[in-house]
Length: 158
Image 1: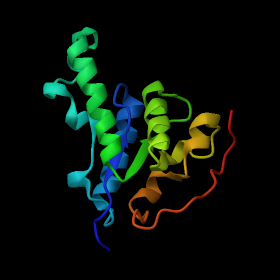
Image 2: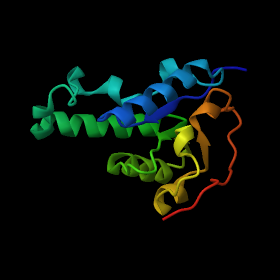
Image 3: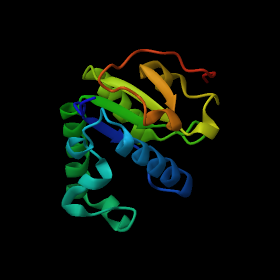
């Protein structure tokens, strides 16, 4: 299989659970033969001027940093083939919700990736509604991004 698809990697990194899911999903993607990870857009790797707000929270009040980071992320979504969202059912992320909606408006295939231990838990109706498929992180390394398909989430919505 050829590594032909680029992704926008939407995932939080602001607490321990988000970091764990982020790392597990990224490791799975590194093993996936259909993902061009080198040319994919990972927001954490594309912070304006390399400034990470988890290390420098004072930049959350810097309009230049905020505007440039926001607009770069929009470019990342527009220029990627697929929107991947690492989704934690019990920790709704407003930023990820915005990214999912924007990706939908741009006609992107949207894949939610949920930690195995959380898969099947109720998810937000709007996040469920925009996604084309929702899988467990353990399934990510074998997901064929060259042949994306629609599938139902095996869980409730709220």
